[in-house]
Image (tube, rainbow, N blue to C red; front, side, top):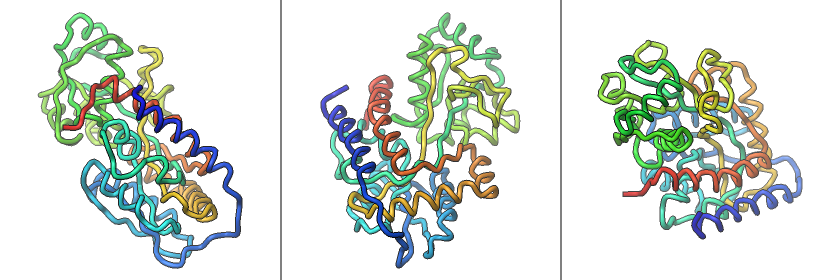
Length: 324
């Protein structure tokens, strides 16, 4: 781990103490609409989930509006929020990629992903499915590992660009299983899945949210899921860790506010999101997207994020991801 990533990880750990030390104060209520800034295009999984999270804030006293500021792998949106007034009215819908991966991937950023933000809530986690084209003879993770070891580089894996969840999940699998694939790089997860369905690539480690339609239609075959244990939503799909010990990969989405945002605002927003995610209708819609609802406290999210920084930095190192 290089010195910059080490310092970032230490700063993340220090932020946990800052969150825990924040004093409790009177109940906070917004006096104008709350803006949830999304760094990705309308209609994508992050945007759709951000709009569901906006619904969890329906009882906060002001509308919660989603605003898309697209570009630079989420950095434009993140910088905008970092420079916004720390008053609880502007938050970023952050992904693992935009808040943690970019810190390790970019040589310099116009914001500090730790010092310029306060963690509000981790609202969903997402696993990846190891899916193959039906023509691939492997019927299990063990079959796939055996074939890949006997035929290094023969299997093509589709990845949605350097630093994507597909890239990290595949690289981690190669490392843990001692196999080698040929990486076929796409400009996003959708074209990678299109080519998998067409048989132009053999396998993809695709986020559940991007795979459900093809999996349910029988267009791809799922060999495993990247959770530590089987998912209650897909109990018949083995955890990859059952065959490849120690393998686990998950991405996530959460809310961050600008540093200096009043603790009362942070706590109130986190409580509203958590309560909203317990609503059966919203929870069902989140799960239908392939996400696992969480709804953490700010303290829990700060601790989680502090642990994520070195984990993600190691994934960047293992994958060899670079910004072109």
